[in-house]
Amino acid sequence: MAAVEIIIGTVYGSAVLVAETLEQALLDAGHSVRLHEDAVLAELDKDRLWLVVTSTTGQGDLPPNLIPLFEELRESSPPLPGLRYALVALGDSSYDNFCGAGRQFDELLQELQARAITERLEVDATETLEPEEPALAWLQGWMGDI
Image (tube, one colour):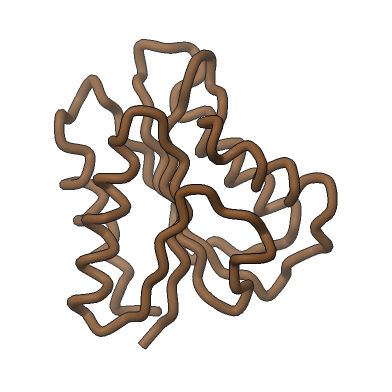
């Protein structure tokens, strides 16, 4: 079974609900999970799978609680070629920078040579009122491979 760090970027709570839904599915499957709403790099185990769940604010911006980790990774992290991750980006396609926070975080992890284990999931608030449903289906599509 895998050990998973769930990193949450949220403003209004949608990402928390998605993260908690994914956490429960992972726990039910026998995986070890830790949730982080205000993550700092020192608290995250790079040997565990990182599952990032983030909403997008403003014009494609990161949620305030995710900015410190993002900046720490960008400014002081060495390459992370051993890090495996998956990412859920929540957004609203009526804005120009749809899922901008998730896309930024994904790009940063790729620049650090981390390895995505699956395609980034982008959930559009204009298409679904319950983002945890497509996120759970996405998770179930690859969870057996970790």
